[in-house]
Image 1 (cartoon, rainbow, N blue to C red):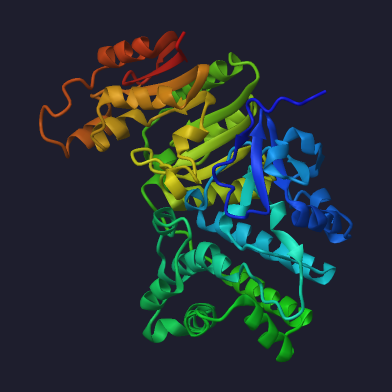
Image 2 (spheres, helix red, strand yellow; image 1 turned 120 degrees about the horizontal axis):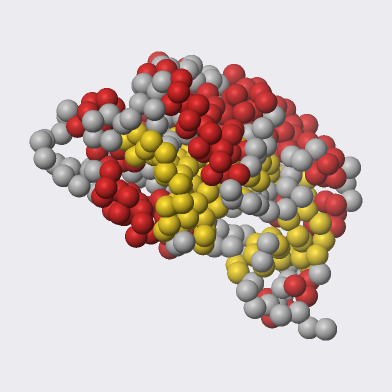
Length: 474
């Protein structure tokens, strides 16, 4: 019986390696392999190390699939089926500790593969995703047999998308997220050398992996890969030396750290002014709205701060994405989730007034945040006033943004902070008088009603904040 390929969609971010490509078919994630890649897959599956990585959950679940699931005209010799990652994120949405843990997993996988006669073609941060606070390697097509004298082909990518961003954070106390968001290929060595001149050259990892690496790239820019491999082999470059190099990078990455710094948002739960009665009423309202949403696959917690409501949502949903603007707050939340072994809450760094757009080739290689969302529940608690007053986003735009993150029939649980609330007054104090005449509770309710059905509302005991549960499109 012929298999219909209607609905089969190529993954926009999987096209740079012609030997294999990822497709989506319903809930299935499939990978097509050409003849050479199929042969290498069979060799990989027959090793001792690869099944062990699969069993430990360090590589995404992978099994052979029927090649007929993919069009025969594409010439795929074999097919694989992968586990579906609950929510795809990008490295510029991760905190420092998340990026470091992703880098360490990448190096661990390479270190494990080398004694088994394999290496990885790539070293990109985009080869990793998350199950909550647990990183997972997803690019099974990157494994390839190791040849004598061959350097790690992924080293440059690893530096540009993982090591260099970590050096910015650890040595210069800079947020790496804007740098990675600006260029899909990461930060190149020439940029780094300008930042690490003088005495900064002597900081751990800089001389070898920035200055020396950049000089070697320039010197051998016209040398072919085959020539480089032959020269290294003749010079005695061996598998053991390659393994020692990876261990050295791994040791460096483990030492890199960015000390936690206090910020306004890190203390928000203590300074936001909620009474004990407000907190109890708010938590009960949110729990009730979550319980009223059966089989919620994805919850977005916008402005998650310390993850209080993200953890609450995880009791009612398959997966929660906790979005917070402050990288230091996200890092603290990630470390707490990691310590708890939490695999259902993914913390991400993102400014909701400037959410991640589409990027890379034709703007679709890396999907924008709204295109990845389709949530069953969106929590927007103590967020609207920061967008509408703090960032001058018109109130109708804020409501449209929240509704646009929803799957059909989803719920939005949103908090409206009245203009006379102390926090709203603090924000308004820095704005010209009369700038926000439509920032009113009745107008907010009208906008919510135009996008869905308000099924519940609750005024908190303080009297200056109101919660709403809205069924979008209902």
